[in-house]
Image (tube, rainbow, N blue to C red; front, side):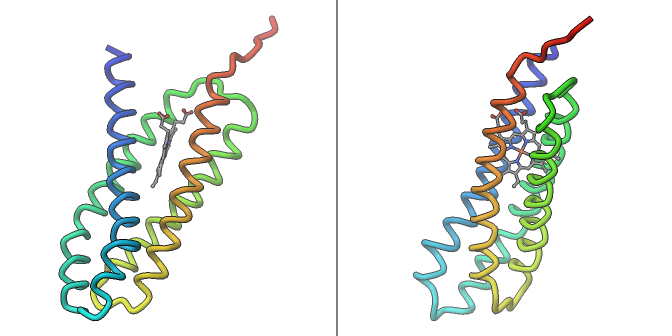
Length: 140
Ligand code: HEM
């Protein structure tokens, strides 16, 4: 049962972060340049993506908290790296909230910031995964 929950929450985490990050990356580098002179279309797309962003952000946070609570004795640098990841997550949430507001003139720059933070988070998460698999020597 525990293994099923672990795999389910890991799937949920990965599925929600690829939806969030992939959506913003596509919007920034494929959609935005193609519709640069069509502000109404840009607003309509932002409005459609808003609930997807909020939904995937909520699921990423919930599944991330579950993942975190599974770590019993992570090695020493784990919490420091996790803390940096959380700061970058906060940046993504704040920038996404601002970028998807109607008539946001800085949307492109905010999207770029989200893509950069998101890619750094993925790298940090790879490190977290690596070090959380290192067996900890327990001395009696
Ligand atoms: C946009 C935001 C986020 C991105 C892009 C992201 C990305 C990732 C990725 C790619 C993994 C590796 C998945 C795996 O190998 O199983 C991961 C794992 C993880 N994430 Fe996130 N995540 C985000 C938000 C969060 C949040 C908000 C939390 C906690 C509240 C969180 C906690 C964790 C934990 C604990 C792990 C497991 C790391 C380990 O294996 O030790 N993540 N995340």
